[in-house]
Image (cartoon, rainbow, N blue to C red; front, top):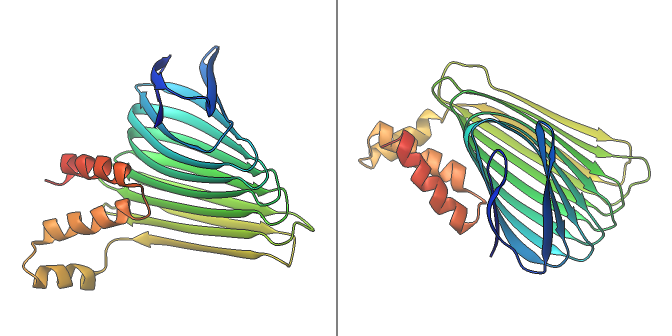
Length: 261
C-alpha cells in the first residue's frame, strides 16, 4: 500500500512505488502537494494538521483504477483538493475528517471520455465545518457519485455546498449526489445540492437530508435491550462506516470511542 503522511510543513513519512510520483512545494503560507498517478494503485493519505493551509493536486492518467483512503485529523486546516481524471479512469475516495475545525474546497475535473469518481466523505463536527464541492463533467460518458455524511455534536455545525456541472452536448453522463447530516445539537446545519445541467441526455439526481435519528429506529433497538445512548452510538457507527473501506472503518470505530463510550 502506498502511503503519504503530511503535517503542517513537511511530508513526515511516505512509501510509494513506481505507480505514483509526488512533490511538496512551499508557496509562502500555502503548501502544495502534487501527486501524479501513473498506474492503477491504492494510496493512503494521512494529514495531521495543527494550523495548515494546504492545496493537494492529484492528476490521474488514462485507463487507471485508483483507490484512496484519506484521513484529516488535528486542530485546524484550510484544504483545497483538486482532482483531474483522464479518459477511462476510475477514482474511488474514502475520506474521514476528525479535526477540530476545517474549511475544505474540492474540485474534480472529469477530463476524458469514461472518467469516473466515487467520493465518500464522513466527518464528525465539534466546531463549524464548511465544505464546497465542484464536479465538472467535461467529456461525454463521465460519471460522478458524491456522498457526504456528517455528524454534528458539541459546538459543531456542517455546511455542504455540492455542485455538479454538465455542459451542452456532454451526453451520456451520470451525476449523483447523496448528502446527509445527523444533527445531535441545536446548531444549524445546511446542505445546498446544486445540479447545473445543460444537456438532456444525462442522468442527474440529488438528495439532501438534515435531522436526527428517527424515534422508531431508536425504539426498535431499545426494544431489543439496548440503552438509548448505546443505540445512538450503534446508529452513528453504521452511518459513518457505510460504503467505506475496511481499514478506514476500523479507524472510525476507534475514533467513536472518544466521543461515545
